[in-house]
Length: 159
Ligand SMILES: Cc1cc2nc3c(=O)[nH]c(=O)nc-3n(C[C@H](O)[C@H](O)[C@H](O)COP(=O)(O)O)c2cc1C
Image (cartoon, rainbow, N blue to C red; front, side, top):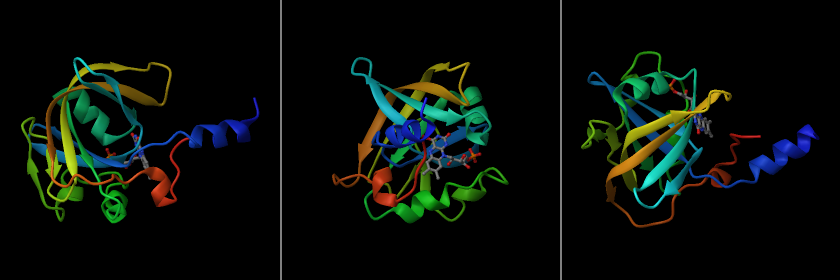
């Protein structure tokens, strides 16, 4: 396979930019994620690729819930903040206004919309990211406007 073509082709798949919120035993964390898509209408399911070496995946494996905070076009700075791995769990959310949702997962006050999910399946033995399938059990919209997508940011994740 032409490795450069593989990289360029895969990077043409459009993705949004989200802050994924997680909670475990009252401890909160969040990270910037982009590999998310809807995979069922009924029940409403989303699938998310999550790094196997992230703090957040081990929290999701245990608590079996997560939130998806959808960012607006002018909120790249929020995404930038949540890219770094947690050094101390809870630290990343300290200066970002948030509250607990129905699942206990953190919801960012400034996000334009959110969904909260209960985990139904975790798959992908082969890959370096687990595929977490969550059922949407709560949703909210603060501003009905276009969402930030990866191509807006000039960043890449994929290839
Ligand atoms: C543009 C961008 C997109 C990202 N998308 C994902 C993603 O879809 N899934 C993922 O697991 N990590 C993704 N990451 C990496 C996480 O944000 C990063 O691993 C984070 O440090 C994990 O935090 P944690 O260890 O506190 O859970 C992305 C990073 C960037 C810069």
